[in-house]
Amino acid sequence: MAPEFKDVYGEKYLLLTTFTKDGRPKPTPVWGVPDGDRLVISTDDGSWKTKRINNTPRVTIQKCGVLGKVKGEPVEAVARNLPKSETRRVFDMVTRRYWWHAWWWIPQARIRGGVDKVHAAIEVTAVPDGG
Image (cartoon, rainbow, N blue to C red):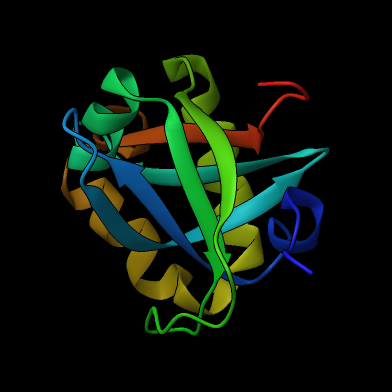
């Protein structure tokens, strides 16, 4: 039986696949945090995944290992870039979940200009019924 969004979005390590305008998949391991019935992700502002999401909100998520090795079937989902006002909240959520990486995660953000300047937040949700 194929997994559903609710079976995957809470996993510690996820592979987020975004799609180019011509439909080519671009998988990327990400750190995500469940936030209600959605997944939130902190990433670099202006990253290719944020650009692809602006063009094509269709994504898939799937379980993976810490280095991105796939461990499950992909699940269709929808993504959107959150407003800048959400960046700090999502960054803090990701930092709390992956606290053992904070020793380099936080300083690198500060060195590059600050969390609000260099990061962006992504929201991933289940595909709505019937669509």
